[in-house]
Image 1: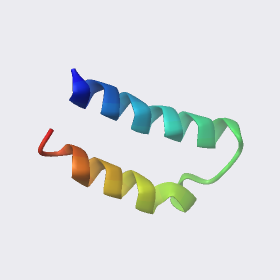
Image 2 (image 1 turned 90 degrees about the vertical axis):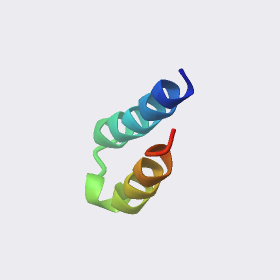
Image 3 (image 1 turned 180 degrees about the horizontal axis):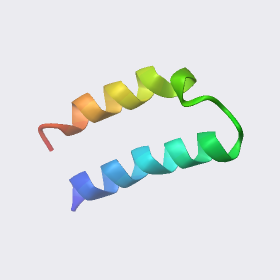
Length: 41
């Protein structure tokens, strides 16, 4: 359940960035780091 919540949080951050008109490339470091940390979860 925790892994699902964490993945949902990453997706939510991406959605907010798109809604605000930001380019996702500006968040690539955050998304990559978050994904890497979630792999063992």
